[in-house]
Image (tube, rainbow, N blue to C red):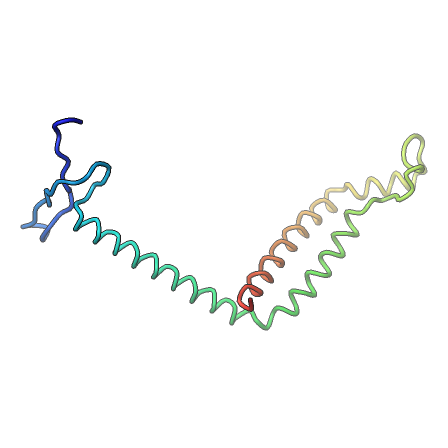
Length: 143
């Protein structure tokens, strides 16, 4: 791009009577120093406003849900206990598995792989993940 002068393309003035800035710019920058500083200030202000909005929303969420924490802990313990029960090995005696098995062992193994059990295990995983995330979010305020 030798010989080509790159100029600032920011619009100066009103919509009807304005014009393009036209000041020469450095390589790789699309704005002159004045408009670059203005853009940086605008973006910084917007980021600060977003951070403040997020902090207010988080504080509001914590205030609304502070009373629910003991219930969440109980739900988490119950969900983890049910998850452990549903995912544990059906038969703890490895010698009893394989070959010709007793019909009760076969039924127990099949029931652990039933669609309803698998669906409930997936649902429990989702519940546990959500409860842990909520408790960690609430704990983050106390740290």
